[in-house]
Image 1: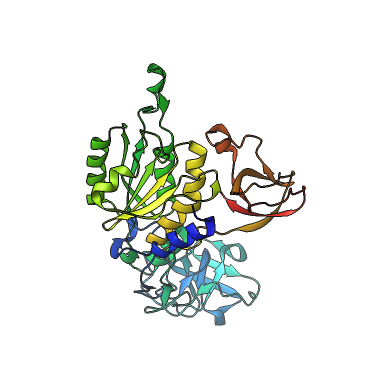
Image 2: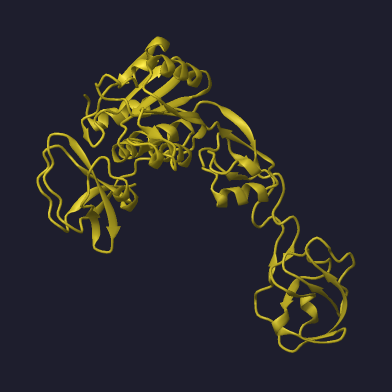
Amino acid sequence: MIPFDEAVRRVTAVARPIGRESVPIGRAAGRVLAAPVVAMIDSPRADCSAMDGYAVRDADLPGALRLIGESSAGSDFQGVVEPGTCVRIFTGARVPAGADRVVIQEAAGRDGETLSVADLPGPARHIRPAGSDFRAGDVLLEAGRRLDPRALAAAAGGDVAEVETWRAPAVWVLASGDELAPPGEASGSPGAIPDSVSFAVAALAEMWGGRTLASRRLADDLPAMERAAGEALEQADLIVVTGGASVGEKDHAKAMFAPHGLDLIFSKVAIKPGKPVWFGRAGRTLVLGLPGNPTSAMVTARLLLAPLVAGLSGRAGALEWRSLPLGAPLPACGDRETFHRARLTDAGAIPLVNQDSSAQKALAEADLLLRSRPHDRPRPAGEAIEALDF
């Protein structure tokens, strides 16, 4: 059994990007850039209007001007603004030749085809110069940037159709246990338990950059489990097994990989909840085993699966601890490092009353994990504690 920090070190040591691929911009959301994104065009491509109004010659103001046309985005005025004339213009439209100012519509009076500007405008010309945002060849996004909505806007605005990203790791989730039933079917079978963990684990893996290829429930039949492991190993970069991690006669989570050459990286971690969590490799594929109890599974998934998937997909920052004040007292810690489920309030981080490893309603209420080191003393309300967004 190893300490938590050592488990994290061993996970992150192998959590390296698994390959690059070129992805169309429409399917790149959430990916991490493996190469910079470089603009293909200037933005704006020409001087354009920043407001709705009239394109004019500054030398003609104030005064009366003759309206000679209209310019809108995608439908530019093709003529020239000569002395004494103006063009109706809309936001984003190209400023016609000859004009050097846009008078906003609120600052002018119009009577048919005549525009009157009574006062000399202020210093703002309401024109975005060509290339004022970026020029063709400029780096818009650096390698390592996650393609969130803002980054996607910048890349697409640079006329970039495809981006070079780290490949999303292919994940299989294998939920073991005779007692598991699909949600909606457990009520019809005495002794059955709805399989809740596999859905949550798959969602967490995708949240941190993974791509779930399959999620299957396995009965406690070792030969069948070995066959399922073999199929998963052919397709997955990472397999997550839930349940079967203890030492009972039906706990086959590790044994199912034995014929496939499982090499354990660690077999237990000195944490609470989640001591039975284990990690290894079979061939090229990483295998992470989580406890079957929902809270234990999700705590260990947040602590170890999240940084593992993040690292494989080129992301960082999965374990960013921060200091928060306790909103209620916290008891002393035993000999295992403990991660308390808590919720963030105006008063600080308040540990949940129900800390049972099988709790599910309480799991949904928690948005923080609070870290207690082995043999920590009791902590009073108001004292700072390490916290992780859950």
